[in-house]
Image 1 (cartoon, rainbow, N blue to C red):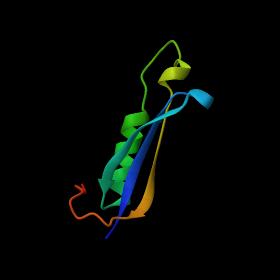
Image 2: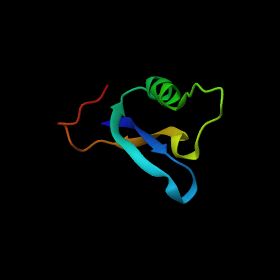
Image 3: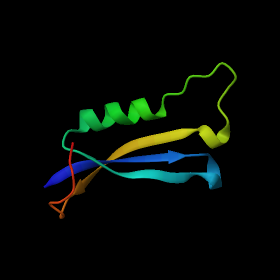
Image 4: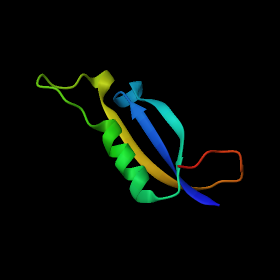
Length: 70
């Protein structure tokens, strides 16, 4: 079975950390909507580098049938 895994990173440069890599989606458009919502920030004073977020969806082949796919 093929799906899309959402990857969410927080931080900037060498301080960037992967914080989510276990959300799986059967449809790319749903994965992209969730990724978009996770990186949206509301601030009038700028975003600190520690709070910057990058998210994207990667296609993967799922070998483990016990994984939950949204």
